[in-house]
Image (tube, rainbow over all chains, first blue to last red; front, side):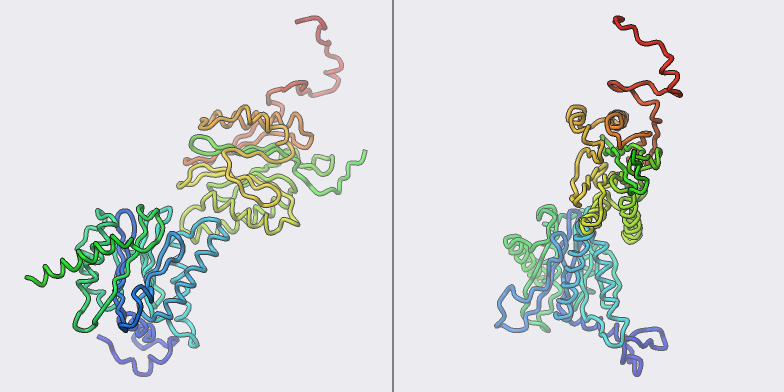
Length: 249
Length: 233
């Protein structure tokens, strides 16, 4: 489906004759090469999970975090170029801090996602900057309840019930659509997200992976935090069992 | 007697903000003085910041006007950005930001009051240095000195709208009776989920307190009137 943009794809400030900016599309490809990131909005909060592909057996488990807290009530899961992701997270943290110091109240998630999207978009406007090679899923819990946003390298940001980016995003989206999110609690959501990530992990192409999950819900006192270890283990076990049942068919 | 007509306009003032069950009532007197001359005897010290948030101004008239103008502008932009009405908390914090950062140059005490869908009716007092204090009721201005004991006695939680407004009018009128820098009329603004109501109570229709005389049209009427019977009980 990708066309060769010969001549029109050298700079982010060049449109192609059919109205596309190829550099932004190539940036999106960088995101598609990364491990899958999934986010869902349950009835009492947000759950986010990352399929963290392990590059080397020498890496310490738990290192190379892909999910970051932006403020006590919001967190971000990053897919794509890790260094680019670090910049976006740093910017989001700084925006959240500055909003609170001026307005005296925690930044609404909608406002935060607009500011982050503006920043990502900014880097698609100048020839001397390259677009960010990463997509971000932003989950937060504010006065208007739990909200989930996704920001793409083009600077687009939409609000979602369920979102996925990375290698297995198509398969993940299909699985998410099967879930009844409005009736699910976050505790159940954690299990479901684990099942989805285990399901779409391709054993043949990528070897080992580590499951990283976070949530913001009533149980976590509306604060963004890592899913507690015991629940995470429960989720992993349930996911592996579900896989085996599938393979047994 | 030196009137000092060149003194900066100051609102001696009594301003009050009170929460009730469902919203807030803001009240103020209407005297703006320049030294001993009353520059405006019917001023409006309760200024709109947004549809749902108002501020009572005291202290230097110029300082308080400029601060409210800036904050109205910031809040307008904030409302557009957010896509919904600003909260009372944010309004109070923007005022505080200006009051604190310019504390060396400003001399104004403000009371921010309003209603938003998250917290309901809220009152924030912002005295001279730029502190923000969320309170169930707040009093400021030179006339407020005479009201501390009164509120200690008269304040109750969860009043009705009518009780709250009566309390405010009574309090402002008591302060006007004792504070030379407060006077004129009593203005009130009631803010709740249904909207904003402005009320006006002319000074000569207020209840008379201890040692206050009936308002007269002419001094001659007082002089020619028969004195009270000394032993009549």
